[in-house]
Figure 1 (tube, rainbow, N blue to C red):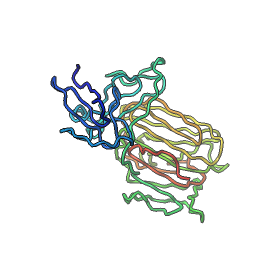
Figure 2 (cartoon, helix red, strand yellow):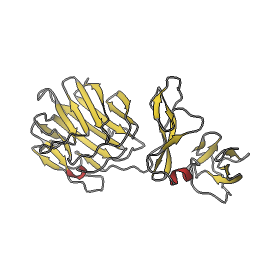
Figure 3 (cartoon, rainbow, N blue to C red):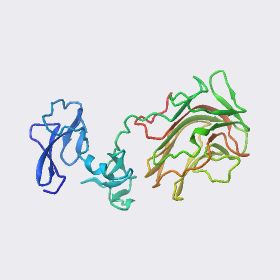
Figure 4 (cartoon, helix red, strand yellow):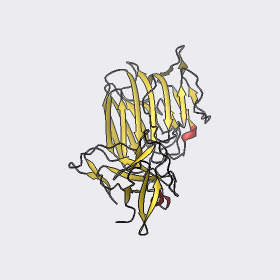
Amino acid sequence: MPEGSELRVPGKCRQYLRCYNGKAVEKCCQWGYSFKPGRGCRRDYHCKEKCDSPHPQPDPHGLQDRCRHLPDHSTFPMEGRCRTYWKCYNRKPRASCCLEGYSFLEGKGCQRNYLCRESCTPSPAGDCRPEASYDFKKSLEDQSGNNVHAKYQNVRQSRSGKIKFTGSSRITIQHFAGQSFGTHLFIALKFKKYRYGPWKQVLLTNCACCTSQRPSIKIIVTQRRIKMKLVTSDGRREKLKFRLLRRKVRLTLQYDGNTFAGTVNNQKKSTQLIGSVANTHSPLVIGGCHDDSFVGKLYYLYIYKCLPSDRRHPQ
């Protein structure tokens, strides 16, 4: 059998065999997982057996050795799958997905393939906590535990805990200036747009009034649309467009190094974008940088440099 092939052990759920240097080596899935032929270790709370393997490392995908010797964000195919592939992160493999209508090709990444129609569920992100967290009902201070300072300019806080932007208002988070987002970014916020103000309003970006460097993250609100823009370090850029059907909006922006996706209330869109988010010397600014400032209310803002497993909005 080929090197790395894996076989089920009859009568066992956690234990399996892996071919290594011409020998069958006993392995164990981690607790709470069971071995599925052709799929590796999968979540299974009914599998409660003890594992007597002399190699009981918690290696849920059987690919730990390969990622241990590869740089972060290296990718390789998953046997028997077309949309699903492996990505190395912190020397561990994570299952990732190409967009619908694409398949993964080794060395080329996700390529258009309408014949690939398999369902795909990426790996959970594990312990992913926000880099900065602001629920304005509770406080104007960061609630992530990272003590990320935000500078408030010309904003007012209502009694119900909303931040009001009047057109010259701005929140500046210097913490993100010059900081790399890498290939993982998740932003969640809720806002309400007033009926007046400039036709185009910048809600969130990493531009600054005193630099000419172009932003790599931008969320724009117009009278009828919401646009999200993202730029990678090698100059690739993509944007997502949504209809503004209600003035009160729950919004998410997410990026995993391969797919740029967003939600606006019940609307969902995504596009292919490969690379790391481009670094800028500018801080993250909420409310706009120039004469295109946001006019409305902000309820909360969460910024992650990872992808949380639960990406629903708080109520």
